[in-house]
Every structure is written in structure tokens, then in C-alpha cells.
Image (cartoon, rainbow, N blue to C red; front, top):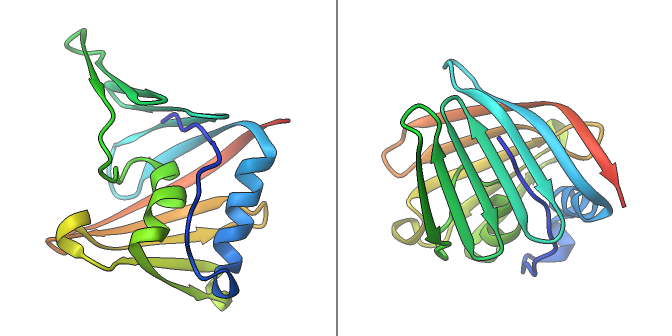
Length: 168
């Protein structure tokens, strides 16, 4: 999976968003970030790459998704098919940048300091089509686990390992 990092405004009560702030500050301090991603309990795995200011790349099994500014390239390696489209304003559950930068403004925010995790729950579930997303933060101030519960109650868990950081 490839994920790119860039600075976007977010509006969360700063007095209660210590963990989210740590992650965003870490992302903003790096020129690029790469990480291995594994969907727990599944054969889905890949890499995410982030590059400032507005690039994100996700490689999963047989597909590659590349986001640059307002354009999304979705390439299916098995079918050798490329679809190019304008990026929508909708939240993508596979975009760590969307989770960190877009969602907080549309969600209630809580933290569990003992578990080093923060939880986002949509103010309007119909708009975002999920019930909650939780991020567990590692010692490096970067996400190490993502837990997503979709609108139907299906649970997804992703592990993020082996970060490679490109300093600014």
C-alpha cells in the first residue's frame, strides 16, 4: 500500500487530541513514509507510501491506487486495466491520510491512553458509511494497528509494520 503524507487542516478539540496530534506532527515532519500493511485474518497485504505534500500510493495484492492532488489512478495488475478519475470528497477507508486529516472534522473523538489509541466515530454514519475507526499508536508515534467497523458491523483490522522514513 502506498500512502502519501501532507498537511491538511483538521478540527478536533485540541485539548483532547494528544494522540492524534502526535501522529499528525510525525507525518508532517517527514518528507516521505513507507510502511508494510497486512489485513489481519486475510491474505491481503501490501505497502503504503506517503510523500509530501499530496501524494499517496497503496499497493494491495493485484491493485495499485495512486493519488496525486485531485486525481486517482487505479491500476489492476491482473487485468492490466487503468482507471483514472477525479478524487471525490468521500472518505476512503484504505487511506490513512483520509483517516488522519479528513475524518476528525466529521467525527467525535476519544482516546484510550492506557492502550495508546484514539477512536473516531462519525457524527453522521450515513454520510461516512462506517461506525468507527480506531488507531493504535506505536512508540515511533506512527499507527501500528487500524481497526475499522463498517456501517453493517463488519470488522476489519490492519497491521502496519516496518516503517521507512524519509526525513525532511
